[in-house]
Image 1 (cartoon, rainbow, N blue to C red):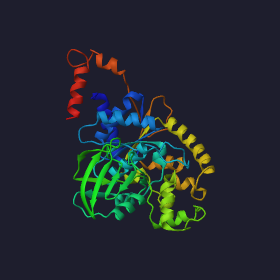
Image 2: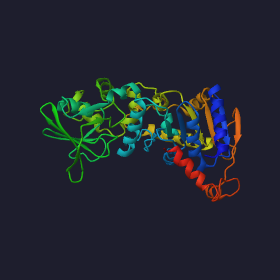
Image 3: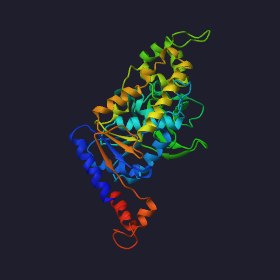
Image 4: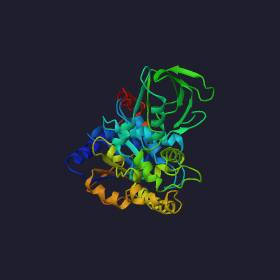
Length: 393
């Protein structure tokens, strides 16, 4: 660990502990930022929320910050949906699964995670944390579980009935065999029911359909960020038009239509009357780390345009209320005044802060090869290797 950076971050952490403050780390080059975030996370006693401009930046930041964390520390990624607001499209299954996994991990509580999220995901209103906790269904071999109860649970939490379960969020049923692919599982799971008893559980290969290994238990997480209970279906009944001959208002028809509706996630907060955001899922108020403020402002401007265009083409226009789906950026900006905030700034373009700290960085190759002030021959490389090994024990 660079001794200067360590001392600076300890000082920053101490200042943030005393009172909410806005501190700028001036000269923080992009390559060093994940390292700085990991070291800051180690120095503070609260969760750390890193806000980036977009998904690509968040994924890179998360990957590199996780590399620098000590064993036992958690780095989580909460991506945006990567579909335009109110677009009649649902997130790609992998993105949906990643979001659900992170929400479930945070809802379970414990620890003080380092959470990385793009601005759009930070501003989104989400399904209430308490509702998500109720969605967790643990299935064990030998449990009593009827097909009808399992089917109802899967439909309520957004699983798609298909011929073959091949992607996260799919489920298929043949007699007493139920195949499903819950988020968080690396492969689909096959449950064999003998009457109302779970007789066996196996992972299986979706291509060959062959079992690949037995399981004693697994957890069924929601497939989508929506809960289709009677209240939600009742609201949707006012906004969906039944085709000719369909039993209008029938709950079975409504459930099938809602489960198949692309982009229903956009309306989840409105349907569930939720104003919670990702911060409400954290175990304690976080320190907020802003990754280059001008980039966040630019993304906020584009997001406002996307939301305006999305409202015009929404599948459920009566529910397409931007303020029910997102925290307005200006409101979020104002809320930062009451929170501990660290700004990573390269060119001096961030808003005024209570305190500014100048950082000096060499390039990684120059730093590692430098002889001056380096312990022993070979420059800083041996010391860096020892530091990394110690941190990851």
